[in-house]
Image 1 (cartoon, rainbow, N blue to C red):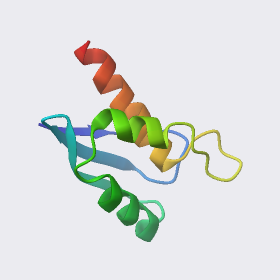
Image 2 (image 1 turned 120 degrees about the vertical axis):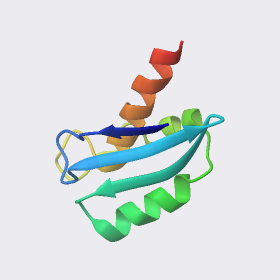
Image 3 (image 1 turned 90 degrees about the vertical axis):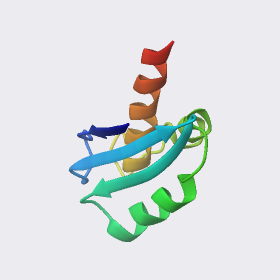
Length: 84
């Protein structure tokens, strides 16, 4: 199942991903720092949702209170919390 969220407080306009057998796939950021976000998407491909959440949570972009990686972690957190 594909999940799509609208990130808040960052440059990217949308974030979509799938979780299959608790593994991330097809992570796609639209907008933002294209090269960096492609790199993040490639690095998290196949990782567990919990591991990605743990590694990316709290990352900040410049003076912002969040970042695109943090927004992915928050979206995964909401998804994981809903499954409990």
